[in-house]
Image (tube, rainbow, N blue to C red):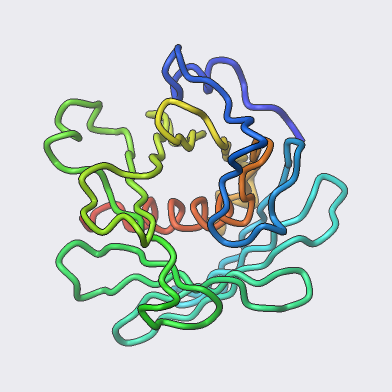
Length: 224
C-alpha cells in the first residue's frame, strides 16, 4: 500500500499531533476483536451500481477480505451495513434524510434500537467552519455515552484537496486515510481508499468513519 505523502499529512494534521499507542486504554467502539497491538493497513474498493446502491469491499494489503459494506436507499433512511468477511453484520450506518441536521447514526448489527446505538457523526458547527478553510471537511464524532455533546469524542479533519484525512482523539492521531484516483474511478465516480489504523485502535470503527465521510462528500451540498 502506498504511504500517504508527507505533504498530505502536513495538510491534514496539526504539527504537534501525536500517534495514539496506549496499550492500557485501547479505543474500542465496535468490538475488542478489532484491537491489535500493531498498525493495520487496509484498502477500500468502492463499486457504484446505481444512485441507490454503493458497495465497498475492504481488504488487507494481501488482498484478503476483511469487511464489506452493502447499502440500499430507503424512503426515510440512507442505510449502509458493515459486515465482517464471513457476512456477519457488525454495524448499521443510518442517515435520516428528513432530519434537520442529517446526522449519521451508527447502531450495533442491523438494529436501530436506542439500546444498540454506538455513535453519531455530524459536520462541525458553522461557527467553527467559518474559522477554517471553506473547502475543508471537519466532522465531529460523539459516542452514545456523550449525551451532552459539549465536546466531540473524536474528530475527522480532511485536507483541502480531499485526498486524505486524519482521525483524532484530542490531539492524538488514531487513524489516517488517503484517496487513490485512477481512470476507472473517475469514469464511474467511485473511489479507492487506503486506511491506516494505529495500534490499539478499533479498525472496524475507522472503516465505518471513512464510509460515512465518503457519503458526506458525495452529498456535500446538504448540511448535516
